[in-house]
Length: 266
Ligand SMILES: C[S@@+](CC[C@H](N)C(=O)[O-])C[C@H]1O[C@@H](n2cnc3c(N)ncnc32)[C@H](O)[C@@H]1O
Image (tube, rainbow, N blue to C red):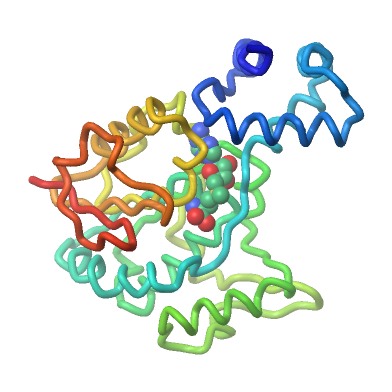
């Protein structure tokens, strides 16, 4: 009840709507912020959110989990290459939407895959998130050296065709992704809960985002995806996400059950 009031306050004052996020996720993150800030009860956090803009934005950051990787779940990318690339090859122009792109690794992975398949020049990638800080980092395409070893391994596991290091320039403690990967990516702030259809696209990837939503909100966002996809378009979800609770399940055929890849029926 108190958390509901807190989320209502965040929505009324700042326009960010977390009211239908999973209670377990919100509860965990709010308790964590309370512990870090030495706050003992929820009513205190409510008034702090209303009075202290900086604190409110800190809480918004807490509620948006931006953990991501390049070529996250390499088997998924192998399946994309096998099952989805042949479909994309039939289109003269390709539009792809990464919904909830966090700091951009998924969009850069897609750009690499498309370059290797000779499709990148006819593709526009729309990479969206409601977290502007994450989007700013995504646009820069600068990643710490610490994660590059893991990204390289993922790339090798998905059977990338080149050396992963050919896609970036190394600097002292970080790498900068090649400009040729950035050129067809449009980064945009879009909130899946409060904003409408983004564009008409051939492929949507929304991985590891819907797990934070309750079933009604998942359904609502699934409708948004359905309306954004062309007939025959492809929807990719994360490994813990499915169309099971969606009223739209029968409007898709399954391209890869394990990798959660679905094709919109005509
Ligand atoms: C765990 S990351 C997933 C990143 C990437 N898709 C992946 O699978 O590696 C979840 C992202 O969803 C974003 N997100 C959460 N709620 C959102 C909303 N209502 N609208 C847009 N993005 C949202 C978060 O900001 C975060 O960047």
